[in-house]
Amino acid sequence: MASGSLTGLLRNAAGRAAGLAGGLLILLGLSGEIGCTLTNAGGVQVLHLDLAAPRFVPLVLEMVGWDLLVFGLAWFFLMRIPATPAGSRGRAALSLILSLSLWRVVAGRAWALATDTPGPTVATASGILAWWVYAALVAVVKEPIAQTLLEEDERQDSPLLSVFAWHHRKDGVFSLLGALGLTLVWFGMPAAVADDLQNLVKIGLLGTAAMRIGHRCLSRLTVPDGSLDHPPSPPVRAARVPLPPEDPAEFRNGDTTKNRGNACS
Image (cartoon, rainbow, N blue to C red):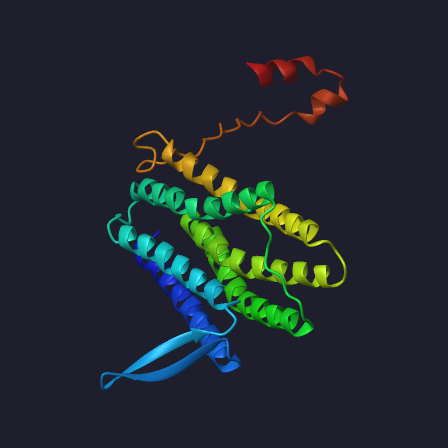
């Protein structure tokens, strides 16, 4: 597997995620959540950004921040790992390190579940609709990115692609779960129950994916030296030795002993 194709996939995914973040920030500005004002300070025009109701801007900025951090680390180290069979051990180590970003989310959800940390609340139907619009936009962009990376992972067998796939998939899935939880609370479910259900689902989905990725990485890191450069040859099957043809006349006369003896000699 060439590192160029791998970095190209990651660069394309990062570009699409950046486009999503930019579009979301523009929509939030049009909706009034982000306000811009110009003030004159000593003859200098200063632009101020104001958050009227900071609901989605922190989520978008956090999403962009982690996208940039994970992609930047992968890009930096992939440029230094040779695209050779032996280099797959280095890529496995890099994948294991970057999978910690998934475990960070799992640990955060487990902490929220243990401490009963309340999730976001919405008091109006328009607020719930806004959450659904936000979640749908994130899922529509992020899930195709995850599908593309997982399909390439099946072809290239690279755990790093799986790390990035779940890094993007969690954004879409968790946004939809958040919108669903707020809707259930709107219809009468206790907020604590809705938050606990969301956290359990998030821990189960992302924890299972992170464990599978970790197992794949460790299996590559524990391969004996030299096995990556010289893969084992396929087993050779023993050739079958054909038996000599049988004489039909001997079977007609009832004499099969001679035939068996000749076959075994």
